[in-house]
Length: 284
Ligand SMILES: Cc1cc2nc3c(=O)[nH]c(=O)nc-3n(C[C@H](O)[C@H](O)[C@H](O)COP(=O)(O)OP(=O)(O)OC[C@H]3O[C@@H](n4cnc5c(N)ncnc54)[C@H](O)[C@@H]3O)c2cc1C
Image (cartoon, rainbow, N blue to C red; front, side, top):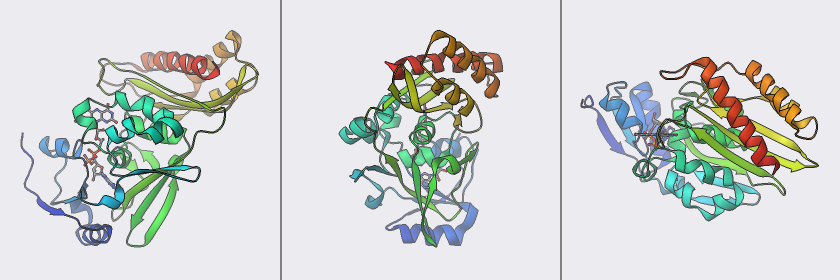
């Protein structure tokens, strides 16, 4: 299928984008890497009258270290994150997750900001950014504002971005001393969207875990934390009994959505498997 007709404008500044978004309202869409937007146009799932290409806005590129914060520009491509030495050192969770995003050709074009703004609950970056305690930097005609990841993802394909705002960057606290990070996912074939996935961070010590964050993807309408399971796992050394109790808590705590191939029960089982793997990796 071919996309419906649309107007195309290439922006030369963020101010121009804000002006066009303000004027055109919901009939305009921002075009970043196009790896999702163009597919939805071709499938006629979306029919904006205007595409605003932000690909020329160099201010939105780049991965930089600012004190103890890693800042990733919205236009950093998946491959830039995957290959960044700064990311490998200060946010290794992202380096572990990147190879799971589609295939190389998609990672060469798709952007970090595009995946966060689109907020697909099966996407890797939203879960990672939530697990890392990241902050999203939004820009619009009223200036800049910062939104914590836990408030940014609001439902399926739904975020805190207003219609006239752009995601400019994402800021992540750097890996803390002694912190371990772990990402794993289960997919039918490598490169497919995950059936279930888990982004996890913690500080191991005395046989147990502190500051544990477990964030699941592909289970609900947004990346999902499991606070009761986290609390149980942090209450003492990680033993077989504690893991079994944590698995029981997790099965009660999460309410996964079924998808075309996996039932709710199957998703609960996969989540439990991922949790056990993550805890063993983090505590090691
Ligand atoms: C075959 C295939 C497999 C894929 N597999 C995966 C996968 O396993 N995991 C995964 O996470 N993704 C996957 N993707 C999607 C891919 O990661 C996309 O790159 C990503 O979801 C969107 O990034 P983009 O730069 O291409 O955004 P675009 O397609 O250009 O835009 C996507 C949406 O975000 C909005 N947007 C983009 N940038 C901004 C911004 N800076 N501010 C505000 N709004 C913005 C757009 O208006 C649009 O609504 C796959 C895609 C394909 C085609």
